[in-house]
Length: 293
Image (cartoon, rainbow, N blue to C red; front, side, top):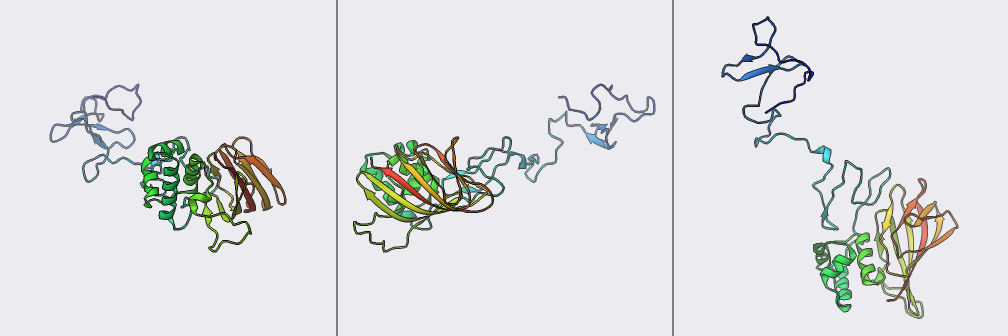
């Protein structure tokens, strides 16, 4: 077995000790050959006779290998059931893009996980969709969806968007917000607050017109993080009015820009994103229009 030597590959093998007075290979007490390392001159025991590594061993005898270079983490992502595995070699990650600070991965809503799971199960069963088919269509793990329906997993906003899009329903039907009645009376409960990677939306009102459901949100979007949304179901549109800050939002690859007092809208049945331009938080209203399926 050959070992890499720190000496020039073109150098000849050292001669036996004593032939010229130049230190060369000598025998240890047990007859094992030693060699000189070129940088320090310290004898190093050759491992050729055993095939073992010269690297220091851990307590269990396993060679000590640093793991920091692979960029993996042992922290489970509780909201999706998958492990965080950023690939340090390419800089790519399974999380949405970040810029300048860590993204916050948190549940879409605080509390009410069991209720959300029951609603999703009911919506799925009403449409005759199996758990496996919904998980596959939404692009989430079957175990993740099962845990969500059973109330043992708290989903992210991105997961809820993917599931409700596959079911063809507004997000409000999963979080339990009901449309106002014809007289426009206010809901008795406090409006739900929806948390995303970069965006936080307070669902102010859900209302219906013939064949259409609308959701009205008060939005706060923080800088430094990209909020990515999967495609909603066919025909869904979003309408954003900015009050403070500057926002780039819309289909990925063809975003629109809006500053204070400006309005933008786009079809959101394709993947789309929201990015703050600059360091100031964006405050805006968002109206999402869902045609019924």
